Length: 170
Image (tube, rainbow, N blue to C red; front, top):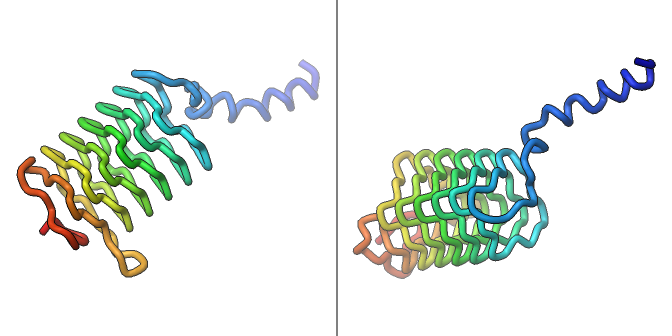
C-alpha cells in the first residue's frame, strides 16, 4: 500500500467502525435499526418504526408527530425539543431515555417501560399512560415548570389527571 492509501484507510476506519453508520438511519418501516442514529432539525412526521431498535438514538428539534413507535426499543434515547404529539409509543422500551422540552400531548404510552427516564419540561396533556412503568422516573424542574399531566390517563387506566396536574397526576 502506498502512504496515501494507508492514510486514507486510517482516516476512514473510525467511520467504518461507527455503530450509527452500520445502520440505515433513513430506513422506514417496522423493525428498523436506528441504534445510535442522530437526527437534528428533521421532519419525520408519521414515521413507522414499530418494533424497531432505536436504542441510544438522538432526536434534536425533530417533528415525530403521529409516528408509530409501538414496541420499539428506545432505551437511552434522547429527545430534545421534539414534537411527539399523538405518537404511538405503546409497549415501547424507554428505560433511561431523556425527554427535554418534548411535546407528548395525546401520545399513547400504554404499557411503555419508562424506568429511570428523565422528563424535563414536557407537556403530557391528554397522554395515555395505562400500564406504563414509571419506576424511578425523574421529573425535573426547569424554567419554573414541570411536566403537565392535565387530562392524561394515568397508569391504572382509570384515573384521568385533573386540570393543573403539574408534576403529578391529581
